[in-house]
Image 1: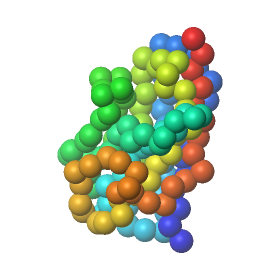
Image 2 (image 1 turned 135 degrees about the vertical axis):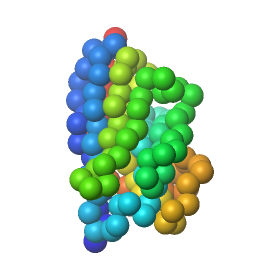
Image 3 (image 1 turned 135 degrees about the horizontal axis):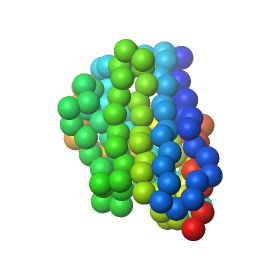
Image 4 (image 1 turned 30 degrees about the vertical axis):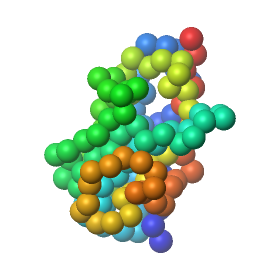
Length: 126
């Protein structure tokens, strides 16, 4: 079955870095865009970065632009999110998901993605 497993979260001081990993199984990763999303307590889930099937196109939310970098290694069936210059407001539960339709890429919101993993918690101390 389709599975996406996130890892790499943790507690970090403001200004620090973390690298999240999203390992996929049960489907052909290189045919689908993948996105990273996050949800903080009391807030809606937010699309923060998405990447096209070969990684040539990316989308970033304004809140993370210039600080986060998404990448993918289709051979390793993993999508990464490098997070630098972390801020307190980046504290959230982070999820990855695959696009609902193969090949298609152009938006980065949760309605266009499916098969959410359990997520990984990122906590940034101020």
